[in-house]
Image 1 (tube, rainbow, N blue to C red):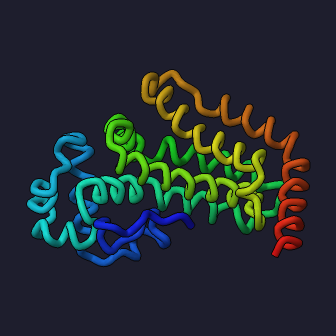
Image 2 (cartoon, rainbow, N blue to C red):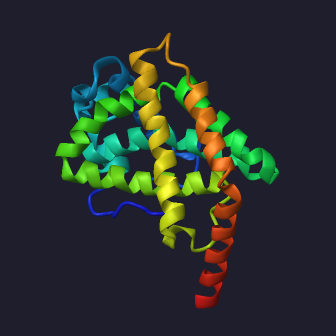
Image 3 (cartoon, one colour):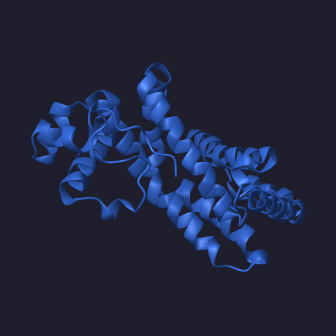
Length: 226
């Protein structure tokens, strides 16, 4: 897993290596307060002062865990999407190959409909474009997301991340919840998620045998190099 450099980034690493529930209690309290502030008052409310007051901790505790505001914002983004991605990968990993693809589409649909993290994510995103540190951290999280997508599809073989086609697929899959959530948010009553996800499943199912073969060949090449 790609981790952010330590520097002044606090003691926690991003992306989180385990579910959010595994974080220390104080870190979870800070994240909960920051997430609520983001949801209710927007990105500008995510100051260390506001979060410390809402969480009932001092700013030193936030700096100890997260480093600075960029680290805190990154942790909020990570917390918003991390467990959803882990759940998606875990929900498909043990399934037979013929069931895995449909389960992945169901998981993506659940991420869009059942999780409210996209609103907070899209509130943060414009600021990430202007903030180099936050942009770099968010880019790191996306790299982790790509790997989870390959895992969900059963394509996360050794060396898969060195294959342009497989990584291109992982990047496209990451873009699906992003794009569909925008369309669903603009037309919550009229946009039907079933249609694009069924089309995506159809396209992937017709190319899955080739993708699996490609992943296997990549694994063999990686083993030969090792």
